[in-house]
Length: 145
Image (cartoon, rainbow, N blue to C red; front, side, top):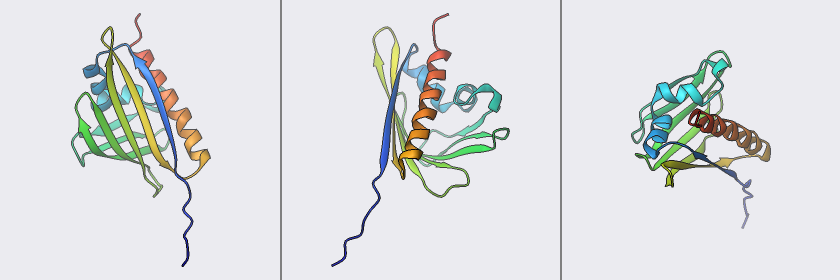
């Protein structure tokens, strides 16, 4: 009998508290024009295509930065959970992103991003930085003036 060795999969969890209602944060994730405003830095001139229904596309693209995420919606429970199959354009490997929203006091929302399926620590680390930056922009978007 031969045992196959399987490379361990790496994962991350990032979260943030957003000073906005759960419905507003859901819109931030599922309205293409709104998502494009905050997901990447403004200089990227981001565009998005989203159909928040099972098997619908969830794509974010920057021609200037020459990068894109090609996603597919796996689960879309409005104002609760968005789960995506996630792949960087030009790569074959896909990962899984689960975004959950929890209401908290004062009409705020806790957003939790659980991203799994990374093949290396380096890949995981770059996504930790990326998600942290994205969530920081989302926090700033709803920060009280």
